[in-house]
Length: 243
Image 1 (cartoon, rainbow, N blue to C red):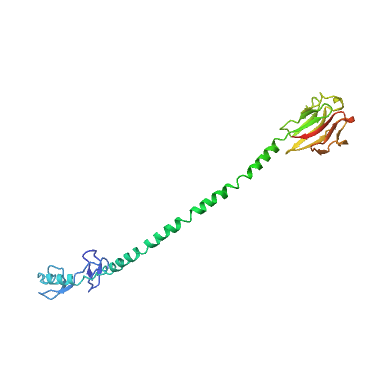
Image 2 (cartoon, one colour; image 1 turned 45 degrees about the vertical axis):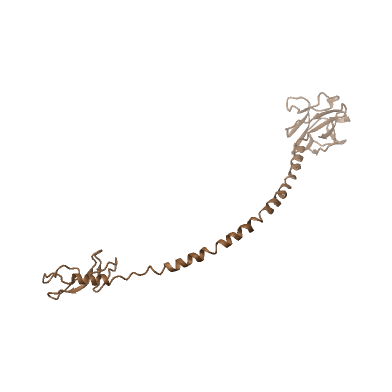
């Protein structure tokens, strides 16, 4: 075995380079005095002690034998040939694409502007219609005095009658002529999302819609122009109105 002087790897006899680090290995030569084999880098023979007379010649032989790394020369020719070939084609497509791409963008940009500006107007009338619905007010026109009594806003149930200790009226009719035929707790008007209903809540003289008696507990949907009479004899009469 031949020990590598660089990494001390054990290499087989006859090896020229170290298997681990590729360092040139000393070769076995015969001693010029006693003929015993010894390493070429030995300074004297281990058997007879004579100085190694072939050290200079063996080192020259060892130095001339290992130069086998001519692997790098082949890559330069292909790289040099590829550079001019790859550098020449890019300029023509770059110059040809610039004028073609620069001309089309202006027309689509100008055409989209008028199209996008036209649709916004339609939603505006919708909001105005909603505001008109929200601002509608309901009122009862008293026919005997031609007085309009506006229904209180923000109430889901509007109590119609005269002052009392149980359910104070939201629409007080005690100041109207012939109000004695109206009960203190006479009727309720319900506001359900802008739709109005009236029902009799157990009055003494009843509630009449368009001259027809409204049974207690039944509801009637009010529409503009409906005639409401509180009590008998059509003495306290109203016309339902929306404005």
